[in-house]
Image 1: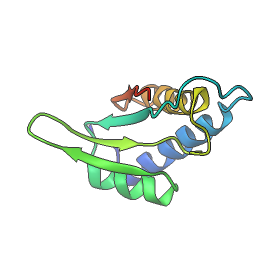
Image 2: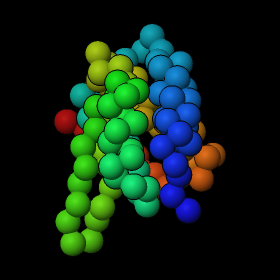
Image 3: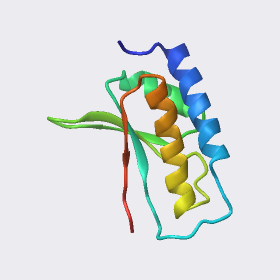
Image 4: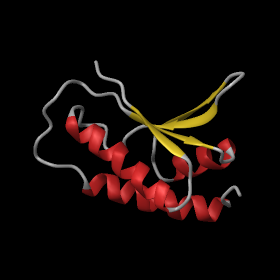
Length: 107
């Protein structure tokens, strides 16, 4: 069952908080451009809530895929910290029953 806007707002707020807490001092690695993909939720609701939470995201839809891609909350980082942020967000969403996937992209 799709989450309401209020539920999604609470979940994404918690996910953003967890992501920001995951940032460490070691930002080595390549320029990781990892993103979080959220599936099976109303894209309009997810996009609205992302905007309200200050998260950058885009809606992707084609014949076989329909998801919202969410970037890491603190984009000042690139390497490991970017990866840590999206992985932390994904764990939070998974606990709340939201289907999501970390899309790993290494530059």
